[in-house]
Length: 208
Image 1 (tube, helix red, strand yellow):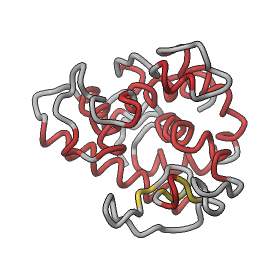
Image 2 (tube, rainbow, N blue to C red):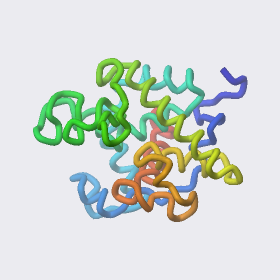
Image 3 (cartoon, one colour):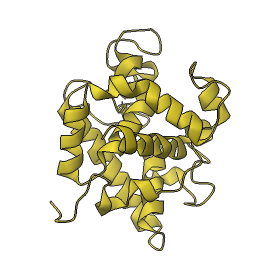
Image 4 (tube, one colour):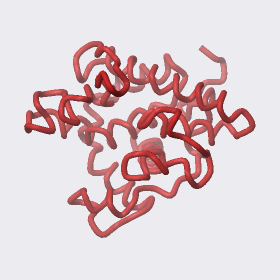
């Protein structure tokens, strides 16, 4: 483990230094507690709404973050965006949640929604949906995409590369054409990395 690792995740960039515009109005309107909001304030409102659910897993989140030298708050942000802290997949709700731990019509698995779709990420699920093993797998996938983005955009800052890696976690590095304003052009809701970063920054300040 690097000597200078911190809970901000310096190895891959400081999550608190990543620029973000937060959630889109569409993402906020889809959430009952953030309706009428947009931007960073909407992301913060949704992160706060998920706080108690995320807290259930905070110990293993911190362990995985430390072991992988990545900000635990970022893991929290992804869990909040993907499954509302696990709340969205805790009880089956077909067809979107066919059974506990599965989302996106059975294409996503676990708190961080590992893409198991043969026509998508084609990952083989590891561990239980809310386990440390699952978080380790998903965080490894995230780090893979950060590294891919670093190779694709070597002249960008670590923080830009980190944000691009978050966007790639959602849609793959082939869908990321720019690390500037268009980083979320092809992501879900066209706001994935911006929303995740804003939520992560809230969790860094208030939870982790």
